[in-house]
Amino acid sequence: MPVCTSLRSILLSQYRRRTTEFVCERKGKCLGNFRKAWATATRRANMPDLLLHDARRSFVRNGVRSFIPEKIVMPISGHKSRSVFDRYNIVSENDVVHAGRQLDQHFSNGHSLGTECTKIVQGDSVVH
Image (cartoon, rainbow, N blue to C red; front, side, top):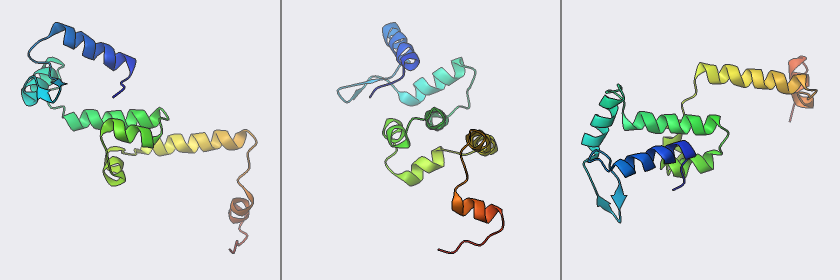
């Protein structure tokens, strides 16, 4: 599975150190205890309460915010269903505000609302 350059560097660095706390799989064989390794890593990072799912959620949000198509983010994060992916792709109030600003910028660049939207905004009824 491809990973971004910075994560690849961290993983290679850890692999070269070959500490017992680094966990990986080689041909289906586990080389360490994941729970113990995660606890050690989060303690050393001064984030003892960090859950693996927090990291997964961060990846999903960062991927979507980086405009990586969701159909690409989903297999990288291991999500097979849209409903579970949507639970990880949490939308915040700031996301909604940002979307409004993007729309303002879009319309200030000369784009129109479209005929139906303009009629609704102006109070005309639109029947389809």
